[in-house]
Image (cartoon, rainbow, N blue to C red):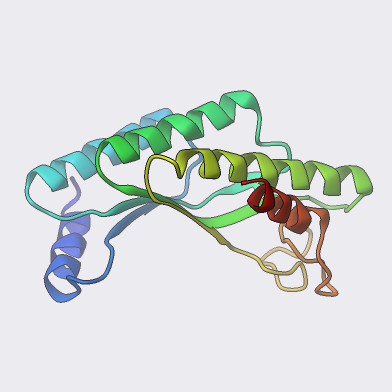
Length: 171
């Protein structure tokens, strides 16, 4: 375990005992070697008495990411988190349309968000899961040629917004 990570959790455990302690990672679940290192680190820290309440994933994915294979890897990661008595949070959700917004790309973005959100709802039956968007509107993204948001540059809801709304209503 890198010393700086251990120290960060020790300090936050000591000085922020009422705040949830979350280990946040940016690579997608298919990066198994990387996630295995995260899991090993978390288990080592927990075995030393350091509290870690949740695992976070910065879910910046390309449109169409939500294949059955990727969704199953996400399910496995959430299962592991819950089996180790932690919450799972998507801390930054983005589904990138790159370069050109078309009706086809908007539909694919809505499906991507919807399928990921469906996995979270499914796994909420077994423990706490959380979801946060990263870009609220395409008017303010870190790369102007990407369109990752639930709202367009005029702050109007995109199909992805309604896809998430529909999943919540179905649930």
